[in-house]
Length: 107
Image (cartoon, rainbow, N blue to C red; front, top):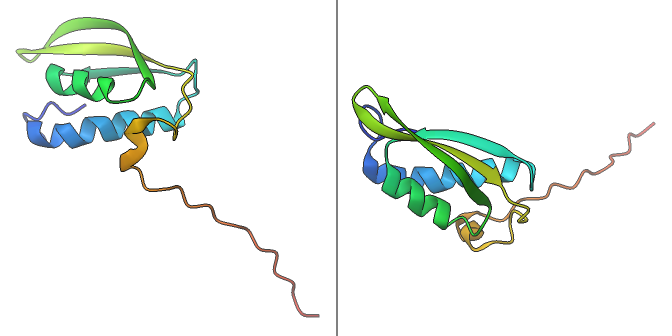
């Protein structure tokens, strides 16, 4: 995840981190999906995880030095929570369902 040092900004991380976690929750298998993320913005990341409505569980954190920056490597596990039925999805626009129509060709 961008730290907000060389790329982006710490302010933008407050929107980016929840959006990334939401999208990862959408594509990860409920109950068994995992994600490993590296970030230096501990406060923003912790807040983003807590706002996910239980879609992610933090399993482990390892602290590392990345070019002089104190960063965390977070191991997350996707909970069995159903995506789209938790409070964090308020920001999401409703999924559009496209109906396939069978067009008959004229003979």
